[in-house]
Image (cartoon, rainbow, N blue to C red; front, side, top):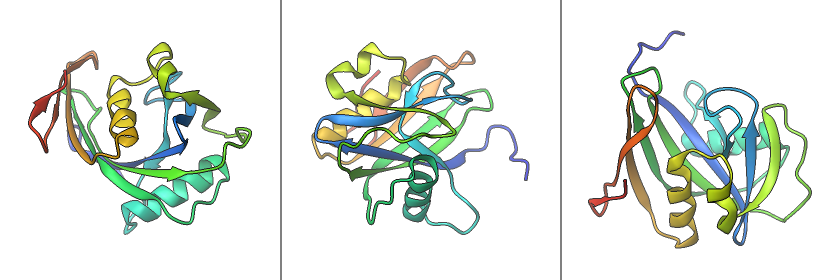
Length: 161
């Protein structure tokens, strides 16, 4: 099924963490190739976001999480084909050795090192909200080269970028 360019695709981000450490995926392919991101992906037809988060976690890591906590929403808009609405979920897991993954390389990354690795500019804000246990609705705008130009936390109206 072809989605008309400019329409939002719906996805989930599945943040797996152990205290202040995050199990992140250094991606093999676009979007965000060679960047560290949470696991996740597009929703299947008729699938709820929470079920998609559990499925994507299982498919990409082999880890079965009985429940995931809904944390917030990230909406990304650009004048290109990169337009997403992502439901963000979190699960606390044991700090096990990172499993093999066909989507990229999984690595544990402490929060205080997130800014030292290639990661989408929006993600640091997501991890920060998770550590504060604060719900969020983030609206991010990008230019035609996919540089983040503006980001607002819609629940508070706070301009972040």
